[in-house]
Image 1 (cartoon, rainbow, N blue to C red):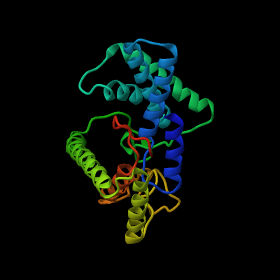
Image 2 (spheres, rainbow, N blue to C red; image 1 turned 90 degrees about the vertical axis):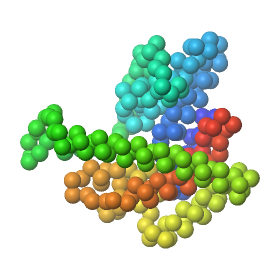
Image 3 (tube, helix red, strand yellow; image 1 turned 45 degrees about the vertical axis):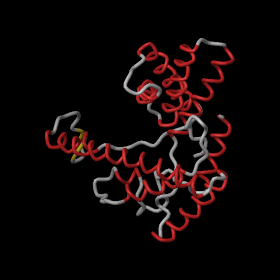
Length: 244
């Protein structure tokens, strides 16, 4: 599974598919961990912990966020229940994976948070009641957006299956839809990862951190491009995406 995920993800990004890295990293880490678990003939409980460690390592390495990777791995296998005996293994795996990336000279995107500094001098940590209220409202909006994204992804996946029962043709249809959207909007800024773009005027994650950047609808267009891309991917019976 791991080589297939790597190759298909690289191909997806190469041709402009709107896909991210988190799914690929999680699947790569989980696949390799599962292989090691079978090879070492571990018990089901130990295999589960090893899977969490693999997921944490993949997430922590690809984003350079080992703590987030460890927490994500603890949450993803069993929603609503924490397996605390896996806390140390997941954290250790995520940290070592991140260090390994840095040892190979692999860097990560850095984001500047203006909240901790202003007017040329560092302010440091401080509380702002108005900002906290905005965060609450934004959190609700983010949750609703995530919910609609998941529901629309399921609907799009079902629609692909109805229109094209033969799975290998679904990415062809998705590419046609994406090309049509690109020509309709007259821009390629919603293709690929969306982290950066050679065009300074494009909507990117890095650009959103600039205080002078104003954009209200890129999230909706990016969601549409991503739903079209991911919903056309090949799926394993267990629902694990093996493409992009």
